Length: 176
Length: 442
Image 1 (cartoon, each protein chain N blue to C red):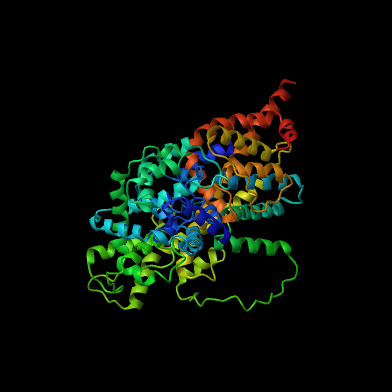
Image 2: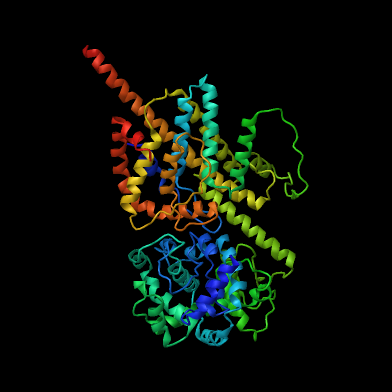
């Protein structure tokens, strides 16, 4: 009943690659799992103040793990990491001077409500053309699904273990 | 890199067996080490020196479904671009001696019409295999047995094509045996039977790409191996005049378009359908529209349930994000159980399972990994290395990761069963005693 066990049972089928032409092969679930678990243990070991701040950190860790395993080839992973890193820096936000070399494509039209909404949802979706946006969205969805499954299985696993421990604790206590 | 290429070209030339001298085929017969490495996950890119032994692990690439277009699609990766780019200019020079081969090669295409793309895919494999054979030092080792198992359907064809490339004829058997002394696969090559098949492949593919590719041949250096192969072939047949944008036949047009779209990342060569405007603008628009539709379909497949509109997809993504937040809150709420060293557990588990199931694969010491913020980097690195097992060592981390992941997925199916048992055992062990794992200092 390991975490990965559950994940494997749930997810091996879902990691299909319907169109290998467009979507690059998805990172293995185990790599994300390993990374995330490591980060999780790290966060836990550093006794944090409140559960909410810890939750924040965990969420950011999850996102960063996802982005890392997706690889730097994905625009959304880069944007996500950039966002996370920037937030971590925290200092007063000044407008970084944009180097002139960055060419901004005049793609985002803003006419289609759906398109705009999609751009807002997918990280880094603002500067992409529509075609690319769809591609990134698909990959992002795959990663999100994987991440959710991973976290869900961790929660299940740990709650199960927790309950088992509690039960074992209670029994000797009763006998005493 | 260039020096390497030249050296290898020369060495190749010295061995008259290697057909890489064929300029038409040089694109995929380049002994470019770094490029080869970049092709980790791609079977299509294959170049190497025949004499050097050493099966290439990339042949472990999903060969389980060789006769599928999908496989062909997989071959089109951007890594191919570098390979072709680097290789073709370097090796074309020393290899001019075999222009006669080209002529023979071209003539053989006259009886090839029924060939399908899979044949071409088949063909693209050959150099890969041979190339892999040529780079034992650089590439991760891969036992012949594994290649035998995976490439058996290809072995004959490969050797046939290789022979065809070099010397269409009798010497092929001797050459192959001479070249592939280390590769057991290619003993007793049967050239004749497979030769026409490979010719068919090339011919068919070539025919399909005939008109469109001609004007673009020079322009697109950075194309896939497959494309370049075809283009090079077309160089030989300059006799046929080509008007790229004119529609000639409708039934092939659509098919060609599909194959074009699937085979070329960089440029889409479309034939205008019959009765439709051949305006370049409308053509481009149509291409774009079809691209978008394709991706939309992909997205809709991912989203569970019927997602007719983008709206639902957006809602789904938002709900996923909320789920992540919710789960992270939950995780934070659960009391941390100190004392469980998950990393070591996982690493050990993975190492075990990997060593057990994929004994054939050697794990190249790839030092490229995304930075991981953890105190136990060494341990995790070991685990990750096991996991992200690239078939060859390369300079580019992305390709390593992606290719490794891809290959890992292939083996995952086989591994999954052993995983489940192994994982349970390991978890129990972890709970019972952590000390040993920590002390091991993996």
